[in-house]
Image (cartoon, rainbow, N blue to C red):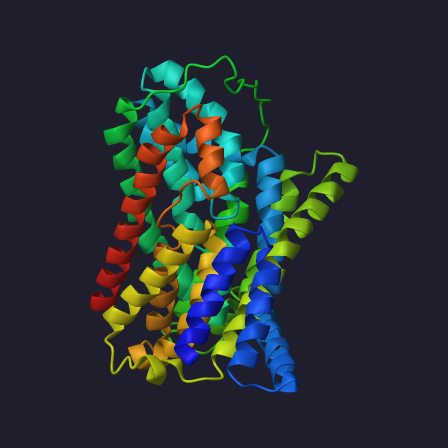
Length: 439
């Protein structure tokens, strides 16, 4: 019965999202309620469990998501994303410009959503293509895959944040290990772009996206990097300070790093650095940017909370004993997490929904898999992330952003972008397994 319930509610989430276009907040909440009744919980227990799951999930990451979104909006609106891209391009050089575009996308997608990042930088693709003679689709695929890499692995992107909260993983470890996993994943996209990009053709249409003249920015590169790098460094240092051997001792240094590296404080510091980027912009405009950021963050926070509620309902039964996953190895558990996320991603299109739903499903199974340490839980988050990027195709809004802003048809986008995300997902889970066996 419990197996049937789990399969039925996952199928419901997919159908409701894909066929009926139901918002994930509703589909996840309804799935939680249906699961509760089918699993024999009383109405009062169902509501108590949903409330506890929702609140517990958001208690640690609600403000982190909000602050991270503000940083992303400021980088976008002030032109700092262009400054970041140009500075990386200047560092690596025009000869290796596809690599520069790939790495620029990788860095920018940590605080900025993939869709926005691609739209912002697509005109840069065309300009560099003209200067270098390298086909524009090499740059398009390199950028698309670079943006996609950090999106599913590196906080403060909402997906990894949500998974860390649901699986009770250490955010600093998720960040550090996520950087180790996501960089090779990004480079996989770059090599794929170099391989396939020259054989792809743009559509010959009069309705190509017009290039816009970019206004020169007065923001210096180091200023553009600060809102992004400072929180990452602080969160990473907190994880180092809290390592079981306490390498920095337990004195005042530990206390300072433990406080400043807490995700809420670290991201709040990043917000103030982001504010400094817009100090020459009108006050009214800056107020609108913050409002826009909170609107974006609100939807993400609610989806994350709904996923936490769904997970709390599933935790009321011993799924591991029901499925009979007797003493499954940690590596096997990571592969199962990857596979579930990949199925959900491919079926319904949203990486964030795939991450949240999969995390809710596997959270009760971590003990059975033997994934109990903080490192193991962080790797479980990353295994889910790898699955949630496998693959981006026609039911994914990002697929359409890439195809439309690159002036390519569906067949070409499937060959270039979709196959690229498949290779990236496989690279991601291989990196996760490698780290599991090393660590």
